[in-house]
Figure 1 (cartoon, rainbow, N blue to C red):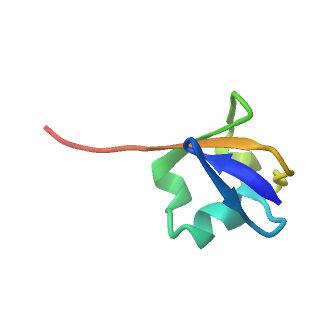
Figure 2 (figure 1 turned 180 degrees about the vertical axis):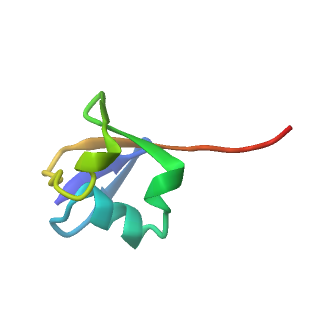
Length: 65
């Protein structure tokens, strides 16, 4: 299926948001995910399936000072 991740179109197998993050080697505790213009609660990452045409924005938290 084809989805858009941070503005880049990609072909991926069917999976959940959590599986996508794991396949991208992204720690789900350190990001916020927007799925089709709505913020997805972290508790739903494991159960939220991705569908063809979905738009995902992944925002990384950065510490500093």
